[in-house]
Structure formats: structure tokens, C-alpha cells
Image 1 (cartoon, rainbow, N blue to C red):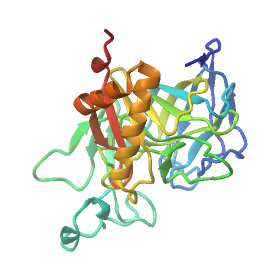
Image 2: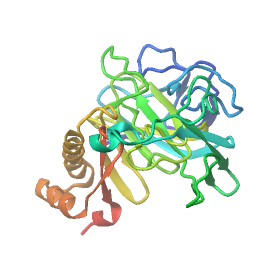
Image 3: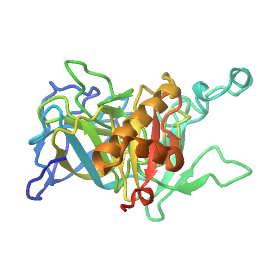
Length: 324
């Protein structure tokens, strides 16, 4: 596989306009070269910035689009996140698990998703506030207080939305995910991760957004601890990669994602998509025979629920890829 690289530079891109669709006809925010380091900011899912100001409407306003020089249809872009950092001291989440995550008989008995109206967002009652301790890298539920446990956990900043302009003239919103990426909501997409996406239009048209200070597997409340982020990233172009959906590379794993609209799609289908892509991934990028790819997946693969009734990931540890 050929790579397209340029000399590394750096630039700062502070958005003034935000979009909520992954559409190739949006005006370009910034043209960037592969290997160029870009620093920018994202808003929280409601449209508030690092100062708590309401900059635009939600859900999931997107920073971008970034036009990637040299990216053409049939290529893939690899977005490496050098920094994904909390930039304010508060966030919010849902107050109850989503009905999509529970059995029908339990749903009949559970509590309503109502806490305090206007506490976090004006006009809403189903959110609770979290304090973000950036010095100690902790998230702490401000209220309500549990009598049993502290409800304080290590922060794990991530980006829910990473995507390129979708194929054709389709303009999917920033709520679902798909082969173009989108609202993937995968909690491994944080600092140090590289996200690979197929290119459908010249320049790819990359968008980012929807920062979470912490999110569990499956995003079962329908959100993470929502907040704004400071982000630094760079890109590479992988020529003629012919990807069919998102992949993620980390220091310790390679990952295929069966990317589908969250909270409404079959996880069976997502598992099939992730597995099929991983077979191709292992053959094309790591030189395995098809039979070897099947057996490696069978005995070293780990499936992760990315979003409930939505996407699945198949993770292969790099320790399983040692060469003969």
C-alpha cells in the first residue's frame, strides 16, 4: 500500500461556523497537508464551548471540514490524534440507561429519566452534571449523590464524531454512523489512536466533534460525559486502500468497526461487517493467508460493543501479529 506524505508543519484552525452533516458541499474550513499538525477545538454535543457559551445548536456540531491535500476517491485517510484534552471543568450525561439497552419487562418498572429541569440544559430534565478534575484526570458526579459509592472515575477523553463526507450527495447528520465514520462513539478513539476512513470525494472533507470525558462500552445512556475538547491531529493518505468502513489503529491493537446507526441497528450485522473487514485487513495489510486470517480472528480476536443496537468492533492485539 502506497503512502502519500509531505513535510510536517503545524497550524491552528479555530472554527467560527459549525455543521451537523457530513456533506461534501460544505465550505472548506482549512486545507491541510498530510503530516501537518493541526490544533483545533470541538464543542460539546449541545453546542457549548470551553467557556460554557452556547455557540451553535446541537446535536453534535462538527468542527471542519478539513480538506486533505492529495486525498482522492478510493484512497483512505489516517487521522492520528496526538492530543484529545479536556478544556473545561464540567460535563453532563443522561440520568438513566436508554430503553434500547434493557429488557421489555424491566422497562415497565424502571424510573423515568427525569432529574431536575434546566439544571444542565435549558428545557431538559434528563441530564445530570459531572465535575471534571483536569489536574487529577478524574470525572466526578456532582449530583445526585450515591450512598453506596463515590461515583468518581478516571477520565478517558475521546471523540464521538470522526468522519468524512459521505458518498454521493448524501448528507447524513451528525447523529448516526456509517461507512464514512460519523458519530461512531467508540471509546478507543482518543489520544494516540489513528482512525482510518474511506475517501469518497476529493480532499475527503474531514469533520470532528462530540467530545466525551468518559464513556462506557455501548454508550448505554445514549451519551458519554459530554464536554468540549482541545484536539491536535495529523493525517496521512493511504493510496488506493479501498476501505469499506472505519478502522482504528492503536499502539497495541488493530481494529475493524462494523459501523451502523446507533440504537437502531442489528449488532449481528455489525459483527458480520467487522469480521469480514478484519479478514481483508489482515490479508491486505499484514500478509496473512485467508485461512490464517480466519484462525487468528477465531483465537485472538475480541469483540467490543461500540454502541448498543448499533456498531461492533473486532480487536486484534498486535502481539498476535508477530512475524515468523
